[in-house]
Structure formats: C-alpha cells, structure tokens
Amino acid sequence: MISHSIWQEIYNTLLITYGNQHWWPADSPDEVIIGTILTQNTNWKNVEKAIAALSKEDACSLEAITKIDTDMLARLIKPAGYFNIKAKRLKAVATALLNYHPDRNHPEDARRFLLEINGVGPETADSILLYAYQIPTFVVDAYTKRVLSRLGMLSAGSEYEEIRQKFMKHLPGDAQLYNEYHALIVRHAKECCLSQPNCEKCVFNHQCNYRESQ
Ligand code: SF4
Image 1 (cartoon, rainbow, N blue to C red):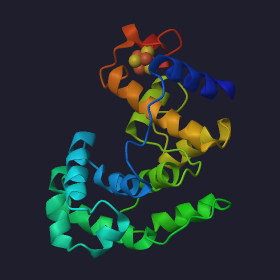
Image 2 (cartoon, protein in one colour):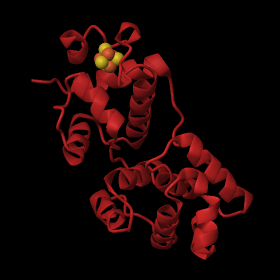
Image 3 (cartoon, helix red, strand yellow):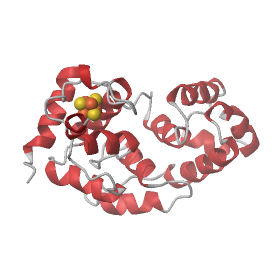
Image 4 (spheres, rainbow, N blue to C red):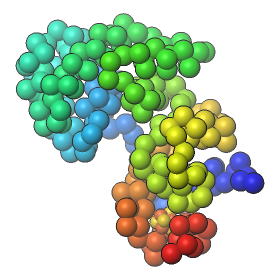
C-alpha cells in the first residue's frame, strides 16, 4: 500500500531539485483565464505570441474579449492555432466569467459551473480554478500521467478524475501546494522524464518502477 507521505515526498524532491516555478506566468487573473484557452493543443511559446498580440490591442482582459469582434479576435490569436474555435471559446468563457465570483466554500459547484461553458474541459476548468481563483483543485495533464505512472503512483490507464481525486486525497487542500506541484511535474516531464526519459540524471532513479523495468 502506498504511504500518504510519498505524494508529499515526491513534491519535496521536485521542489528541492527545480525550485519554485512561479506559475501561472501571467500579469492578471484575466490573462490566466485567457491563457488556459489559448494553450489548448499548442505550446506555450505560441500562447505568448497570441497574448502579446492581444495586449498590444488592449484586448487581454475578459471585458475586452466580450466586446471585440470575433473575427478580429481570431486574427489576433492566430499564433495559438485553432484560432476560430478558440475565439468562440474565449468569447464564451469571458461572457460567463466577467462578473463571476466562485464560492470558495463550494469549489465543486464552481467546477461544475465552469465545465458547462463551451470549450472548458476538466484540465481547463481546474487550471482556471487553481491559477486564476486560487481554489485548491489539482490540475492533471499528460505530463502528470506520464511521470506519476512511471513512478508507480498511478496505473497507466487512470482517468482524469481518478487522478485528481488521488492527489487531493493524499495532500492537504492547499492551493499554493497544488499550484507548485503541477508546475514542478511539468518541469520534470520536460526536462528529465521525457517520452524517452533521461533516467541517468533523474533524482527518482533509485525508486522508479519504469527505470527498474528497463
Ligand atoms: S527515473 Fe526515468 S522514468 Fe523514472 S521519473 Fe525519472 S526520468 Fe522518469
């Protein structure tokens, strides 16, 4: 049986190894929300170009997104790809969240509200709750699945909600901890635990199921 503290130990090791990641890289909660839509199916460099284009036109806020012409919005966010779809999603998100204040006492209600918005799936909803509103919900992505399943903490076929619940069951409900933990997993997956992992230089190579099986 896995000890609860292993989840915390992995976090501690990642933090010692990589340091604080200062997520989410944005100047405002509105920019976080916009970034969560733009980053769907693309890399962060492309998101930065789209954010820069929006900022140049004073359009990097939920209020501005509700007012801007949809075609114009699509042109500005073109570097992020899928720009027509993302322009519609940004409009839907901005309209829904412009005057929205989530109830911190009922985070699952807030999550359900977000999941009803067009184009908002679990990863986007949890990213908005955690990084824009500082509500403690764990963000799961492909990097999370890869790293934690290799470490033997998840089975390979684990689904999003099962993984989210697992993190939240084994860790205190602390938004700053979840913020940093997710960011550190992404850093580790990009730097060391790649598709072809660099196990030789990995801090977990003495305790990793995947490494031992190679
Ligand atoms: S030892 Fe290898 S597979 Fe395991 S976490 Fe580290 S890089 Fe990933």
